[in-house]
Length: 236
Image (tube, rainbow, N blue to C red; front, side, top):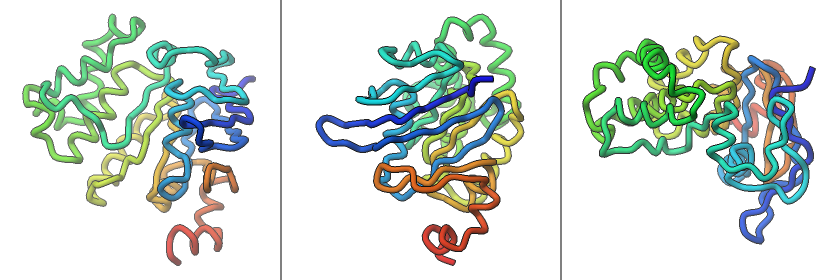
């Protein structure tokens, strides 16, 4: 059976600068996988390739057996890939409800907007309480919940989360991770994160990205106990 996401030997450039070299990765349906690495390692660039915001110069990305070559980002979203971007990027002058409704733009999700909205508010009750407020008045943690909720409104098969914990208090981060865990196996999650301990505790498998190259991969529980990983990323 083909992987849900199959990334095979991609090279990626931003302009004339190469940022990824020979990257391969697979995700099976229902998995939670993390990509770990320091700032500037190429993690966000990798997500840009998966969402078709950047096109690889070499290699191939396939989703549900279909090549993403030549596709536009909105078409990739329509296939069932949703991104929670770094820095949240909510529409600050629009209400919470309007932000969520913006996430349901794929044709496949519009017909079930009400049902999906109810589900998202059950996951993040504060969004229901704040539904008529401008998104810019929310706290950082609430905006992150809104960004995740907006991505879920497209009813994705694959949820990409870029730097979930960035700028958030530890208690808020843990709460959001618990909510993502509650999604179960219906949604596959690929997480990019600098908080290595949190990411390894949440995920089942992980890849280590260093200077644009994948240097390690394995079961998250094993990597969490690895002396080199603990020394390099956890300061232990």
